[in-house]
Length: 364
Picture 1 (cartoon, rainbow, N blue to C red):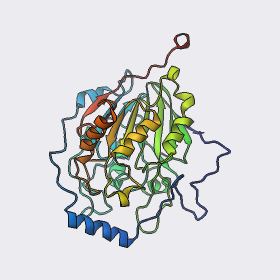
Picture 2: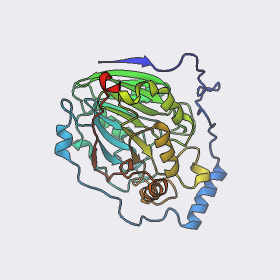
Picture 3: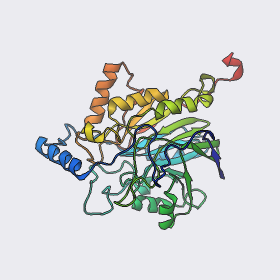
Picture 4: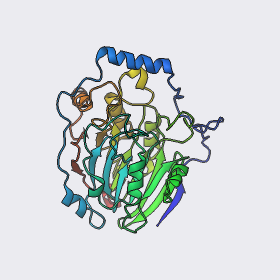
C-alpha cells in the first residue's frame, strides 16, 4: 500500500522548470560542453596518460548472502551493501531497496562500446533478495540500465508485482515503454508514502546539481535528483550524481522539523558520490570531488556517509582507486573520524545502529 504526498512549499516558484520545456538546476545553470571542450578533455587526457592505472586492486569481498537473505522484513537490522558504482542494496524500514541499479557489462546503449565494467557486481541479480523499491536518480546510462531494470521488474517481489520504481519527472514514460507499470514519478520536494512491516515510510525527491539525457535530442527533458528516505529505524539519503551547491544546506533546513536531536538527529546514512571528478574544469558543475562530498556530508548533518560512484567504470581522469585514497587524506586533514565517512569493498555490508528517538520524558 502506498500513496503520494506533497512535501513542496506552495509559495516556492519552480525554478527548475524551464520555460523552454527543459529542466534546470537551482543555483548554477547547466551549460552543456561543446565538441571543442570534449576534444580538449580527451586530448589532454591522452597526452598526460590519464586515467592512470590503479595502484592496487579495487577491494572486493564475498557477500554475506545468509545475512542478506535473512535480513528481509520482520526484525530487520538496518544495513547497506555496496554492489558497485552507484548501486547499493539498503535493507531498512522493513524493505529491500536498490539505488540506480546497473549490473550490465557496459554503461552504454550498446553492448560492444562505451565504459566497460572493471569489477563484477558485488551481488548478482540472482543473489539479490526480493526487492521492494528501486530508486532511480536520473537517466544517464551508468545510473539507468535497461537490462538491469527489466530483470528487476521480472523478479516478482514479495507481493508478486515486482518492485516499485520511484523516478524523477518525465521518466515514467521510458519505463512504460519497457512494459513496467509500477512507477511513481516525483518532482523536487514531492513525497511518496508507503506502508511496510516496520510502519510508514516516506520518500522525498530532492534537488541535485546535474543534468539528464540519453541521446542528442532529449537533454534536460527529464528531471534528475536525489532521495531522502524516512523510515522508523533509519533515515537514508542518496545523492545520485551531483555537483556541489547550496541545495544540501537547503535540505538540512527543510528536514530540520523531523530530524531534531529528540527525534533521532540527522540522516543515519548518506550515500554520496566521491568519484568521476577529474578534470575539474570539465566535471565541476556535475560531479563533486572528495572535498566537496565531505562538505555535503556536513551540510546535511549526516551521522555517517558511504562513498559511492568509484572503482567500477572509468568515466573520468582520476585513477579508479584514487577516490578512497583522497578520502583518507581529507579525513586526516579535516579531523574526520574514519567511521564518519567511509568506503566499502565491493560486496561488503555495513550494519547500522537502529534509529532511536529520545522519548519525551528524557528529552526534558
